[in-house]
Length: 124
Image 1 (cartoon, rainbow, N blue to C red):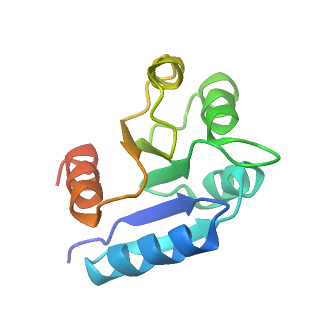
Image 2 (image 1 turned 120 degrees about the vertical axis):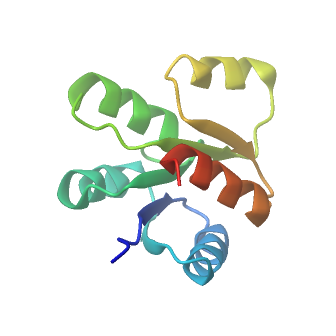
Image 3 (image 1 turned 30 degrees about the vertical axis):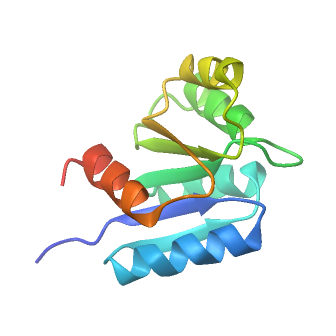
């Protein structure tokens, strides 16, 4: 029996979260959503998703802060981490690259590109 992969989607934009959730479920993934980095951190600690898709910029606790916290305080976290962002500034991309996310996709997200990034990251 093939185990379905669990994807955590962290984005403060409900439309983006729901759109990704529908597209991923239609392609055989189990999805969990969180509306910010604080909620996302709790989900990661409690449910250990197979992969995280996270908005780069969110109020309260950004995706950048979340990944930095995971790298510093939770070294046992090894799931792939994909940033999604409307920011395409090279300085921002370089700053994020220092945290070594698995991938960085810019919004609007193309579902085919996301699915390719997921499959590559999960080595399916």
